[in-house]
Amino acid sequence: MKKTIIFLCVLMTTNLLFAQTGLKLGASFNYAPSTLLNASNPHDETGLDFNFKLKNSIGGQLDFAYFIKPNWSIIASAGYLQRGARFADSEADYLPRYRFSYLDFSLGAVYHLNSEKKFVPYVSASVSQQNLLTASLKNSFEETDIKSDISNTDIGLLIAIGTNYKVSEKHALQFSVFYNQGFMNVFNGINRENGLKAYNSVIGLRIGYSLGMNKNE
Image (cartoon, rainbow, N blue to C red):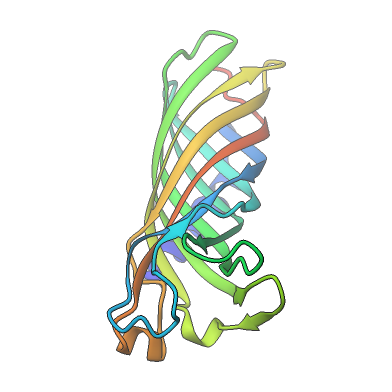
């Protein structure tokens, strides 16, 4: 599954770079509070309740879109995004939290609602793959590397709703709200053997700029 998604993203990007029309290239900054959902810790060896709050996270990405129809495009994305969570029940001066960073890839489809106007609202849905770069357990006093205890790969669903604002015929500002839910247990190794479970969840704001807007959009 991992190799298939990467191959499709590379293939999509290659086709787009050599396409003559219908190509859009975008870059964006993401502010994306994250947490861990459906968490369970049957042994409770940490001494903490296994409930989590949102943790501030940021990232950025590149988007490659190809318009197959005036209102429909296929999109492939690659970028960097932090994830993790804060423990919900802890002392104020301790503040334990998980800090993860991932290399993100996604492949999906976008529907643009108004193809002839200056504001072009859209909705999108994509399959996402996250490859772990770093993982740590941090508190107010120290940070411990736990990458070996966290799964290297996550697969999820990415949905977004937003709008393009055309600043010229082929350039546009982009604003969107997105949600990314992972489907794979983030814990690995001894943590997984001990029954720890939790799933990455991110909700965020995206601000970007795109080049090469389709003339028919």
